[in-house]
Length: 134
Image 1 (cartoon, rainbow, N blue to C red):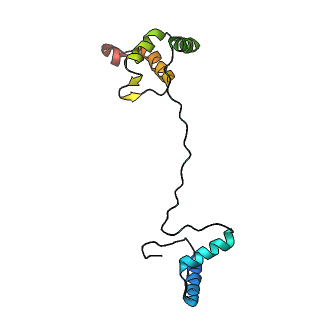
Image 2 (image 1 turned 90 degrees about the vertical axis):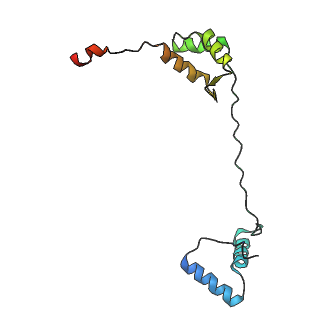
C-alpha cells in the first residue's frame, strides 16, 4: 500500500491507542489489521484494495414522458373543474409553442389549465379616486 492510499476508520481514542500499540508490537500496518478484523467478523467478505473506491449506483427512477393531451381530454378535465376554459384554444396555444412555457417544457398540462382558469377570472380593481374615502 502506498503512502497516498490510506485506510481510515472512525474509532475512539482508546481503540486508536490499542490498535497503534498492537501494530508496533507485531510489526503490522493498521490497514492489514483492519482488513483481518473485517474478514474475521464479517465472514467471507472480500476487502477491496485500498486504491479502489466503492461506487454506489442509485437506482434509476423511471420518469413519465410527457404526452400532449387531446382536445377531448382537456375538455373533460375542464368540465370536471367547472371552468370556462376553451379546450380547443388551450390545445392550439400550447401546440404552437411545442408544449413549452418560456424555454421550459411543460411537465403537467393540468397545472396550465389552472393558470388559464385564473386568467379568465375578473380581477377586482380599486379605483384610485376612491382609495382613501372608505
